[in-house]
Image (cartoon, rainbow, N blue to C red):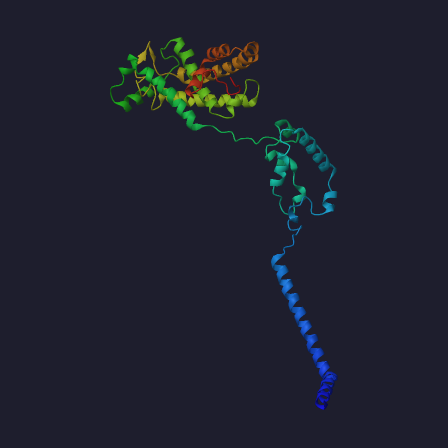
Length: 350
C-alpha cells in the first residue's frame, strides 16, 4: 500500500512540474505551426497548377476603343459618316450576318483601333452594291492602259500574208520572181518617183485606202485607250486616230518597199506601166491618209446611224448584225483578223 501511494505521489509530482509542462507546450505549439505552414504551401501549389484565371483584358489592343475618352472624342464628320454607314447597312437585307462576320474577321492595327474605317471593311468584302459604294465616294481601281504589241503584229502579219498570197496567183507577180533577189529589189526601190503608177482609180483610191483603214483598225483594236474613244470633238479621240494613221503609214511603207513587199516579191517598180513607173508615191500617201479618213467615217456611221438610230428602232439581232457588217466593212475585216465576229463592238454587248 505504501509503495502504491509513493508511486502515485511521484506521478503527481511529474505532472505538476512546471518546467516539464512548459517544454511539452513549446513542442506542441511548434509542431502545430510547422504542420499548418506545410499544408498551406501544398494547397497553394495545387491551385497554381490546376486553376487558370481568365484575363478579360488580355486582348485589349483589339478593342474598338482603348478608353472612353477616345470614344467620346469623335468629330461631327465621323459621326455623320457612321450614320450613313448604318443607314446603308439597314438596306442590306440579303446578307444580314455578313456584316458582323466581316467585322469579326478584320484585324485592327495597334494604336489605330479606334480609327478603323467601316467603309473600307465593307467595300473590301464586297458587301456593298455599286450604288452604295458610289455614295461613300468609292471609285473602282483603274487598270493600266497598254498597247498589245503581240496581237497587233500577228494580225498585221496575217493580213500581209493574205495580200501577198493573192498577189502570188497574179501573172504580173510570178513572172518577176526569178533573177537576183537583192539587186532587183534595190532597183525597184530606186525607181520610186512621181504620183501616178499606171493603176486604175479603184486600186489607188478605194482599195489602198481600204487597206489603210484595216491596218489602222488593227491598231485601234489592240490599244486599250484608242478603242474606248468615241467619234466626236474629243482631243483623245483624234490623237488615237492619228496614232492609227502612223501605224498604217509604217505598215504601208513596209508593204510597198520593205523586205516583204511588192518591191521585193514581184519587183513592182522594176518596169513601167502606161508610161509611168509602177512604184510611185500615190500608194504611200493614200493608204494611211485616206485609210484614216475611212476609219473616222465608219466611227461616225457606227455612232449616229447604227447605234443612235437603227439599234434604237429595232431589236432584231439579225438586222443589226448584217447592218454593222455591211456599213462598216473595214471594221468587220479587222474583227475577223482578231478571230471575232464581223459585227462585234467593244463598247456594246451585241
